[in-house]
Image (cartoon, rainbow over all chains, first blue to last red; front, side, top):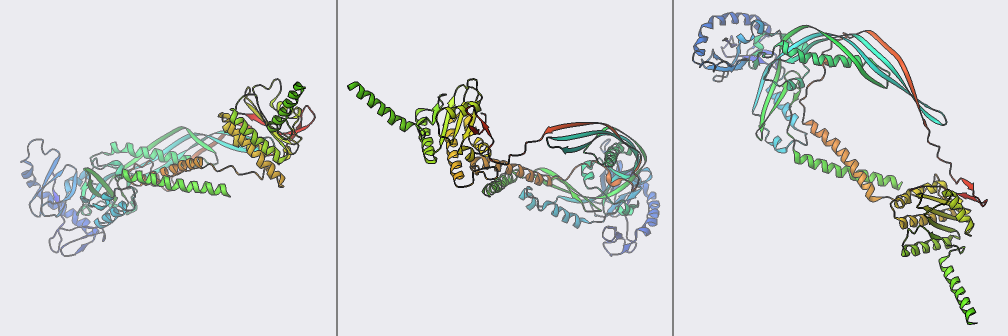
Amino acid sequence: MAVLQEYKCPCCGGAIAFDSTLQKMKCPYCDTEFEMETLASYDEELKNQTDEDMSWETLAGAKWQEGEADDLNSYICNSCGGEIITDKTTAATSCPFCGNPVVMMGQLSGTLKPDYVIPFKLDKKAAKAAYNRHVSGKKLLPKVFKDQNHIDEIKGVYVPFWLFDADANANIRYRATRVRLWSDSNYDYTETSYYSVSRGGSIGFERVPVDGSAKMADDLMESIEPYNFSEAVDFQTAYLAGYLADKYDVDSDQSIKRANERIKNSTERAFASTVRGYSSVIPEHSGISLKNSSAKYALYPVWILNTTWQGKSYTFAMNGQTGKLVGNLPLDKTAYTKWLLGLTAALGIAAFAVTYLLWLF
Amino acid sequence: MKKSLCIVCAAVLCLCLSVTIFGWSNTPLLVDDADLLTESEESSLLSTLEDISEYHKMDIVVVTTNSLGAKTAQDYADDWYDYNGYADDGVLLLVCMGTREWHISTSGYGITAVTDAGIDYIEDCFLDDLSQGYYYDSFMTFAGLCDDYIEQARNGEPYDVSNLPKVPFSFGKSLLVALAIGFVLALVITEYMRNELKTVKNQIAATEYVKNGSMNITHSTDLYLYRHVSRRLRPKQTSSGGSRTHTSSSGRSHGGRGGRF
């Protein structure tokens, strides 16, 4: 099992966390701020230091029944000595006893070390505000859902993503038609010309993300795309302090299928857009070969909001960088029927009035 | 002496009867050989036809038959009008049940008053009733429209291409159509509103992740294969108005046209 990393304030000894507004580490007790660059080297030292503490990890593990702890990890909090139980993939959390943010170093080292991280840019308040915007102005959302607007849980999670680079070689053949219309005094003519159009070439993709966490729904994670990768930085564990983080549990080989599917679709679209000047274009044969050059491992920031309503749980996700919030909402069936009938009546009467006016004049 | 008195009485009676049944020109304005109307309908229609004919000094005639013999509907209608001693000016509607054809034949001032465009309009108005078997209603519609047409023509400008009477506003039909339109629009709008609730969907493509300027087309051909030309007869230009006429077997000029029901 692995060890914990806590970031202690060099000034007061309090536990410090990453502040998304400042984009720096900040001590909540004495308000001291630390540059991330300073911490990068500090980080290394701390890692070495904690290695020495490896001895006391057996203390916790021994008490579990066989098999019971297979999906769990347990850690001892460096601040209060409390036992932190997490599931196998957790890489950062906070101590349930003292609330100090902790990072599990073992989950993020060696081959598990992410290449990049996009730090959180938006905080919990922004997530709440985005949620409120999300539920407002939607007429078919049950009013009660809006009024009982309680979020059970808001958590900032660094979600593991695989980023795939790929070059696609395409050879696509289309059947295209061109239509010309003309007429003489007696006939209208329609001339349809048929063409065989082919396009070949290559197109490159970089950092197509695929969610590497089985816990996170793939469609939810794809819905909050895109992330702006130019703001990504080399991974440092310090960014994780104060947030939750998971390590990947879906490996790159499994994830690549999804990336390739999207790359293939994009390639087909890109090449189809070069076939211009036709009335109709139908792909006849599409040969796309992909060369995946690399897969990188990155942590992307996501705010997860959970709420339950009428026994059903609703999950919302917000892009921690851009603020794009998604999440399916329940449908008010009564309101739907009312709107449908009301609009039918209103629009029907309007249409009737128009027909009548047209008849009059 | 008594016998001759009887004959005279009978003749007077016949004359009286004929005056009531026969119209302006003393020939029957309604000949229901196909027996489509009941007695009361017959007398009601006949009195309408007589009133109109009397008023306009023209003959508005309705003829129904089961067979046209060897003639076309046009010839049958024209000949019926020409050889039964009707007035010079008139309009005749022939309905043949055997072939399910109708024909409107116009003569004299009828040609001026009931133009080709006017007949199109009459067709729109009475064809539904005619094909559904409401013969009395369709004949009354015909008679009423003829009355309108002649009145309009006498007042200067006959109903024609650019000057047609309004189709009566059909309240029920318009309401149904309007509600159907409303329902479809409402469905589109509510579907949009329902979609607003659903924001979680898989991405289809990876367009945001295309490397800038990495698209490189190395091979591009547009090969022409073959062509196919289809032609369609252009709809005839709408007539410039008025009535097209033809000459019937009696040498008189007639307008009008017919159709099936």
